Amino acid sequence: MTSLSLPLASDRIETSVSLQGGGLGAVRFDGVEVMPAVGGANGDLSCFPLVPFGNRVEFNRFELCGEIYSFVPNSGDPLYLHGDGWLSMWAVQEAQEDRIKLSLRQTPSAGTPYAYSAEQTLSVSGALLSLSLFVRNDGEEALPFGLGQHPFFLGTQNVRVEANVLGYWTERAGHLPDARTALPNDLDPRGGATLPDRFLNNAFDGWDGAAQIHWPERGVSAIITAPDHSVAMLYSPSAEAGFFCWEPMTHLPNGHRQPEFGGLRLLEPGEAMQSTMTIDFRRDDLG
Image 1 (cartoon, rainbow, N blue to C red):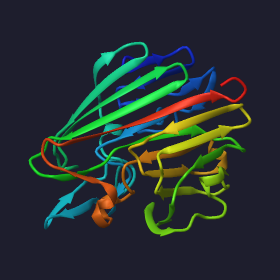
Image 2: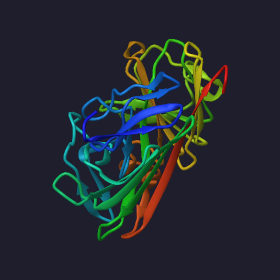
Image 3: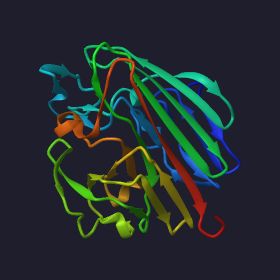
């Protein structure tokens, strides 16, 4: 563990917090690795914050009140991806064994028109992991903001995801959302679904903010609660990858180019928004 990483632990959860990217290292629950560190810019995070919005911006620009706002790609992807938080160095505001508070200030640049202050609190208590995120528009004009989390979960042959959702979005070129359709037969999480053996990168809308993940091979479950998020992205590159993502977001992917900004909130200067996601891990035999 380097000086850029701080330990975070309870009696049942063991992880770390990386200042680079403001995310979590691998998460172990009762000695079982449930969230592998395979994400982020360096492939060493099991979860990272989505701020000031998540997912891609088509054409790397959007229009608001007749003005064009532009981005420069910020990763190997040709489209601006996941905002700034996952790539930035966060400052430590508070550090305890079971609770860490970080902050970030972003100013406009050639890469992004956004100016904001962000804070996040990452904490553990027993079997509960809690991630709270806050953002305030520090700019001189209103812009669309959104929040989310990008957790990576252990992928196993029989893992099941259960969630109440309404709609499903297909994917088109550039990993962008295409059309809202009925839930596919092989991927309907309403009754609990195993992941089909194909590439998945799809949004579910109308989500009530609650989901469950079951790992029958490990005898472990996770209850996700994200009441401020009505959209979840499901990402799984393949069955052999060993991980998948269920990403709570407050807005649709490519929201900047969706009608009414896809759920992104137009924050006036000085206005703020916040969100929280918790993951309650359970031993199926013990609780």
